[in-house]
Amino acid sequence: MTIHREGHRLLSVAFLIVLLLLSLTWAYLPWPWLSSLLTIGLAAFFLFLLQFFRNPSRQLVVDASLLICPADGKVVVIEEVYEPEYLQTQCRQISIFMSPLNVHINRAVAAGTVSYFKYHPGKYLVAWHPKSSTENERTSLALKLHNNQEVLLRQIAGAVARRIRWYVKQGDSLAQGQEFGFIKFGSRVDIFVPLDAEIKVTLGQKVKGGLTVLAQLNK
Image 1 (cartoon, rainbow, N blue to C red):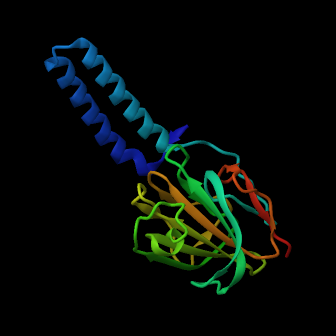
Image 2 (image 1 turned 180 degrees about the horizontal axis):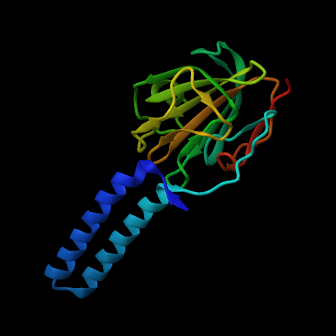
């Protein structure tokens, strides 16, 4: 397992700070038991950061007839909605909540061309709030697929996750499973798929980005 590039600088700084605090703790605290407790706490904090930025090796699903999950997490929404920003049609929304313990890489659900991309500044409501999809800081990315259908993916910042990273722009071509972004410290990804797509996940299901099949296209 490797560490994602988004964590390199932060982890380097955190490691130096932890070393400094450990040195001060053992040099100046007169109570060994307290020094031991602080050492355990600092070590646990650094291990938390390490696991957050992990980038596990995965044998990604590659199939033009399938849409794969763009993120690790838990399915919290499956419903028919009208998508007003770009698709402007009825579609199926699937939302995946990413906790701080999940891998936070965001991946393309299918191979395609980025037909639309926009960053929206906004609020930091908790990710499961119904209005977070339209009022929080977010990005919207539409992919035009091989069959000319389009799907929309939305990265959404939450109350803790206040930094969204993206690596694409309109006109880029993406392979299925390719990284298109990263959300720091947990949040949510919404996916808007055609109504006739056969949904392959269920509410409450835990999913893996690039591995779990989200839906099957019928065209």
